[in-house]
Length: 306
Ligand code: SAM
Image (cartoon, rainbow, N blue to C red):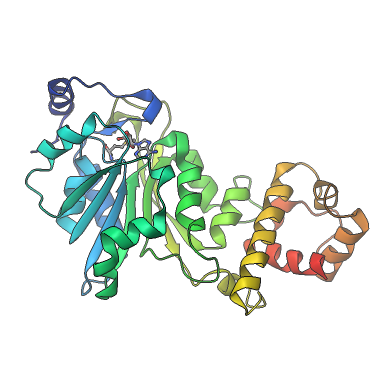
């Protein structure tokens, strides 16, 4: 079934007595070029010669799912909206490598879910990617769940995470320390992944059109926190505790972004202690958190703990 234009998508929804639900962030892609490009970007991060699976969050009516089914050996698509499940059976009927699971992604036990649906593929030397046109109301929680469900001292077990999100958020995720868009989530993600902004997508490509512009961004997992900060503890347990301290520090630093770090952290660390730690890391005493890279936050967390 070709989900190539607004009339086809509208008719299909009507056939199942559905209309796009705002509460679930339902803006369906109606320009077939866009899902094809997103699926190609996603597959581009996977070597040709290994079994490849992909986890899709929110298949909607199945536009991106269809293209992913052409690029990957296996697609597992998690959809929260029960009403869409019978519709997806129809729109994906020609693709026998797709499984649709009715579930709230935020409530999944992700490691157990991956093992259940991709365990055989992973044990056979395959890789799993994540690809989605995300519901914008939960972009950051979804991304943090994808990263934080796994231990920080190892690579996040995805070949890549390629997602369409609000363009402003994409710019934030791709920003460098010191740039205006740089924020807590940028630093949190940099502890686990490098980021590449890929495609801009305008509102006219969706039904209904969202109020904001969109962009596709790729998060490519690196080796974990020890790649960002080689002095992180060698013991895995200690490394996890250290990563937690770094995350807390990032949240504190950006919780009061206009304040200097000495003031922003003062609820937790005495000002003299922060000033001394900053000096030990060769930073000015009046520096703000927005100038620190993920590695800088690691170094500071270490200095504060001494
Ligand atoms: N992939 C489709 C496309 O590109 O046309 C639909 C994308 S639409 C922006 C987001 C989809 O995510 C919707 O189908 C929505 O029902 C689903 N969704 C929203 N919250 C979800 C959640 N917590 N878990 C799983 N799916 C969710």
